[in-house]
Structure formats: structure tokens, C-alpha cells
Length: 119
Length: 112
Image (cartoon, rainbow over all chains, first blue to last red; front, side, top):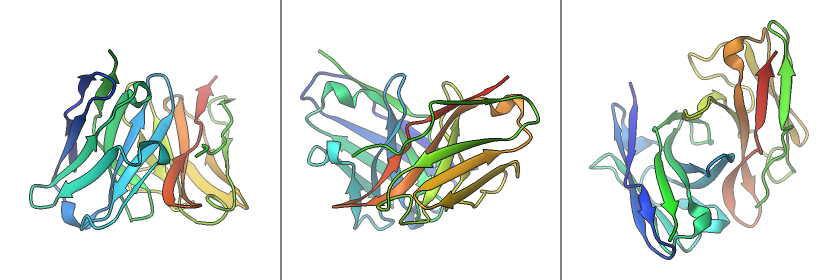
């Protein structure tokens, strides 16, 4: 069964940085688009970013552009989200997810890693 | 970047059918067949129920079906069951000044 395991979340002060990781296993990681999705406490889902299988193309929601960077290491079967200049409104559970068909259907999700931005 | 519009709540009795709407614009729902639907139970990760407007992933019950008309997509749950009680979100590809995805506001489904 496909596995996605996020790590790297935690408590960080406003303006600080965190790097989230997502370890993928039991599928050919290098051929799939991958996404990050977040969910603030008690709120709905928000799409954050995605990345092409070879890492060459990335897209971001406007609210994180210039602050977050999505990347991947296909040799290590890992997805990353570098988050800089963090704000209180970035507080959320962050999920990594695999795209079923490069059209946005996310058929496998990790368990999520919580990020809290607070002083 | 505004979210797609869904009703806050929908309810039905066991065995009934319900439909959840997801309204966007010609830049997202109306312009592309890249609408997906997710079910989320409290404290759990979302689960993909429908993608590409009307395609069910393997393992998803055929009681779930998707459709689209103009700028509005819909998820229909037939033969409503207690375990269908959850939050449901639509998601669409959007192409305005940039390319990205956007979720709906979410719908709480209650089985009476």
C-alpha cells in the first residue's frame, strides 16, 4: 500500500522558518505530480503548492508565493516544503498528497504534520 | 484567490439521495474537467471520492457520482448511509493570471 509520511512540523515564531518533509514509499515516486495541502484549525482545506514529476515546474497559491518553496528528491523518494517568513495565518496541519492522473485528483494522503506559528 | 462555493450543510435520511453543489467560474469549474471531490471524517486525512468531474477511483462505492453543468459541479450520494456523514470538499484547477488549484468552502453532510 502507498505510504506518505510527513515530518518537520512544530512550533515556530512569526518570521521564522520550517522545512517539511514527506517520505514516499511503495510506489514509483518519480512519475507522479505531488502536492501540499493545508488545513487551519477548524477550517477547510487549502491547496498550497504542487510540483511536476521531474521537479521542473511548481505552482503556488498566491498567499505563499515568495515565502514557500516546494521541491523533491526523486532519488530519496522525498517531497519537501521550505517555509520562510512564517505568519500566524500559516498555522495549519500540512498534508502531502499524490496526484492520481496529473489533473489534480489526490488519491493518497499522508497523516499530516501540524505547524503552529506563534510567539 | 476565492474559494469555490458550496452549501454549508446538507442532510438526508438513510437510503435517500443528496446532492452537493460546487459553484465556480469559467476560469475553473466551467473551463476545465479537473474537478475532484473529497470526503473528510473528523481528525482524518481527506479521501478522494471523484476526480476528473465524474471518475470514481477504485474502491470508492458507486453510490457516489459526479457531474458538471456550466460553472457548477455536483456530487450525488445515493442510498445515504450513516458512514457518509462527513465533510465534503470540491476542488478545481483554476487558470487566471496563474495556474493553481482551489478548494470549495466545504459541506457538512448529516445523516438524520
